[in-house]
Image (cartoon, rainbow, N blue to C red; front, side, top):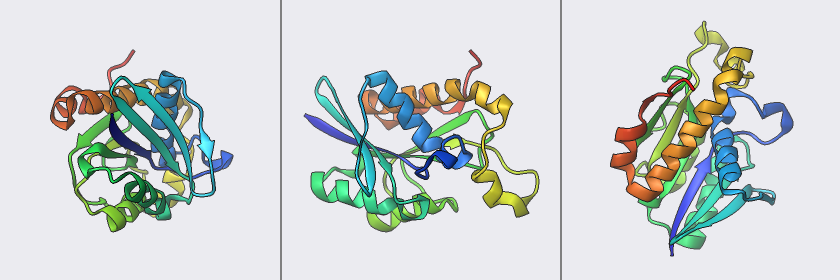
Length: 191
C-alpha cells in the first residue's frame, strides 16, 4: 500500500468557509465528495482516509489556523514517515488569476504564511498545488481580500475550479508530478 498525504490549507470556522484563503479546504472537500469519505476532526486537524486500489490517501485540513498549518503536517510526517514526493500541499495564490491552477514539484512560500509554516517543519522540497485567487485592486487591502469571500461571479465558477484541482491531485497520485503538471497547469476550462 502506497500512502499519500494531501493537505489543504485554510482556516477553520464557518465564517471562513467560502473565503479565498480557504481554497485548499475547498479542494479537499471536493476530493472527499468524489471519494465519498467523511471527516474526522480533533483539535489539530480534520482527516479523511481514502483507500483507492493500492493507494491510501490521507486528506488533511489543519485546524490550527493558517499560520500554524505545519503543526498538523509534522504529526503526519512523524507518524507515517512519508517521503516528501508523496506529500502535496494545496493553497490559495494571489500571484495567479482566479480560475488558474498550478502544480509545482517544490518551491518557496511565495509569501504565503501557511506554506511558510509547512516549509518550517518539512523544508521546501514537497509538491504543491496553487489555486489562483487573483490580486486585490489595492495592495493595502491584502488581508481583507484573502479573508474575504469569493464574489458571486467567482462562486459560480468555483465548483469547476475545485473539480479541476481535485482531478489534478488524483492525476498526481496516479501518474506523478510531471504528467499532472503537463495536463493541469493553466486556466480551468469553462464548463
